[in-house]
Image 1 (cartoon, one colour):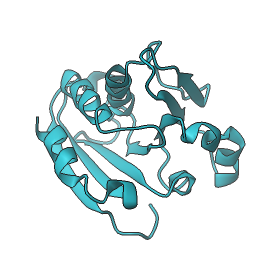
Image 2 (image 1 turned 180 degrees about the vertical axis):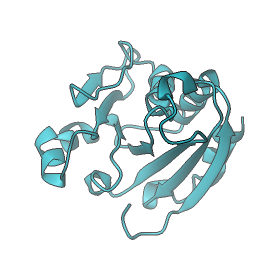
Image 3 (image 1 turned 135 degrees about the vertical axis):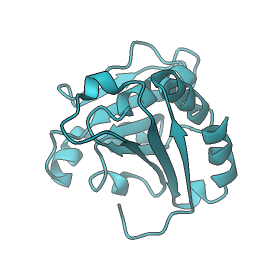
Length: 175
């Protein structure tokens, strides 16, 4: 992350994949065009599942799947809202490679969610949400079998956009 302090930080335990999707839907209700969301967490922690919920909440076209091999995918809105740009920085090794994706070209009109983006994409926007997912399983455990294992979701808001959003994010986490 950048050196700036978060405007807020909230956490909750999520027990199932269905709850993770539901959380994503609730968070989508707080997101607007121009928002950047940076996701971090180990393999199988639920990052793509959370994005599926965000996509459902934004009412976008197409199934949300991991963009690991295509790097970035644009999901147009079905209701005139912001599109969802879903990117995966797992295979990217530098900020220069992030710049090559031109994620900032769609940033003003879309909600941009970047998996594995910590330390690479925060500079794309003056404000962003950082969401860390921590699955409680030993290293080497099968991430595919972990969909319904508890994990802690930590949401921190950075920048002016998120200055007064702590209560709303906390409500989304606890609903």
